Length: 251
Image (cartoon, rainbow, N blue to C red; front, top):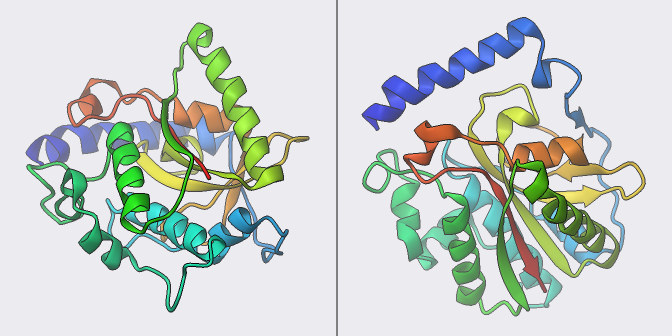
């Protein structure tokens, strides 16, 4: 935690103010577009459910909890098993003990570690679905790569899966990304569900669980992938954060 306070935080604030001063990244042409128009149901039960059960994180490091609980409630309702009020974030933390999830959400973290790195997120997603007896075909953790030679196939598969989510509603995508690549904020790891995709324009809608983000927003597919593949360098790697990626849930 001392390392985070005295090394990482000054570094990411310098990044933030440099980009703001030079009007680069999200302070330039790469800005997300906020969607303030009320959501209208599409008949896609998965997509409609994610908008309905979208919640904001209760803690600065609890984006994983808000993201996963929206998935759990969406799939419970889709399967006709949501009897009574929706599952809350606290319900989820009490029920799922893997990876010391609850401790990671505390002020001090678990052994100084807070939040969930990509591969730990994949484990917690799978255990959460099992805990609520939610049927699914597979849960896949995909690490994005910034190297053009390695990313070509990953990007094509991702685009196909985004179309599958939008058109068929038989899957969900939880993105693990650099928040500063999408909005005017710090370059820190963040987690939120994908809420939509336009195959024609290539725009990806994010249901950001950050309470400071009052509306969903959309970014281009290229910016979306840039945020997923952002390299947090050695300072964040010390805590298990390398390049981001996504969790693909096939239902």
